Image (cartoon, rainbow, N blue to C red; front, side, top):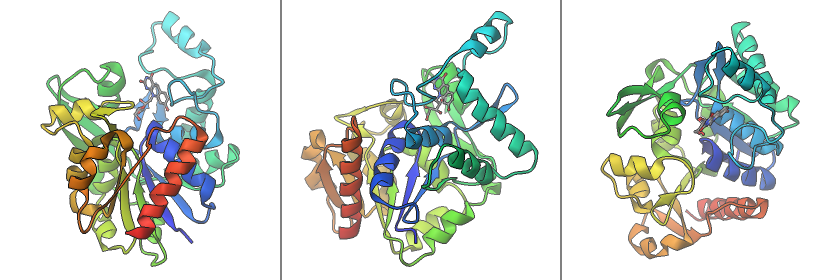
Length: 313
Ligand code: FO1
């Protein structure tokens, strides 16, 4: 029986998902990955957030980047460069094996969920990681350089263009993952956690799938978000820069405001404790704690505390 659904983007989200996986059984936890970052590159289907979750839970993620594998070599990239191929998106030799397998499986008619389940099994994972949808959804970033596919904005242009909005191409034809809907409809579900991921590009693509926002609102479980902003900055990624460019304050308060009445609980870092009183409402409980997850222990403690606040709300 699913007790907790975790909605996650890449690096920060995967750290909390790992913490949750240490205290909940595979039956109790459902990890839902954003697929808005996915794209087709060099003929391969790349699913960065799914893969970051797979590698993080398997304990083989690159600790320096957060994405890709720790035990990596780069011979293919070197050869690609030598023959004039595209190298702006770095795919390690071992990581490539995963993209090749997934691309082949998708071409032979498997769903994305099937391929992720097979890859998770091969990595020895027991906790379910599922894509938000089996249909392709692609985040497009509206910028002062025009509309850019997400990875062209993020990696090729290093998040430098000024952002004015987002579009999730394909989302109106996408269906929520049936396993996610089953879990949301289960009256025994206790918590839906928005991991400390970017609200615009990691959580929003999930919430934009037709029917999901409504299902979340209708469900009796508590919705708790962990803020990705600490002391006005994002630990990783462009969340703070995007907030500023979209006209928000770069604070956890802006994140709470953005999620609005979806939230029953909100977790902020101790460095932002001065915001707690204003953020606390009748509906929304606020927990102030350490949200920087350097060690495994940090991840487990934050996971435990986040679950506890969900139980109290
Ligand atoms: N992020 C980068 O900044 N540069 C890269 O070259 C890069 C390659 C890459 C390869 C596989 C993969 O799964 C992720 C990769 N990422 C890279 C991360 C990716 O762009 C993610 O979408 C972001 O980290 C946002 O979650």
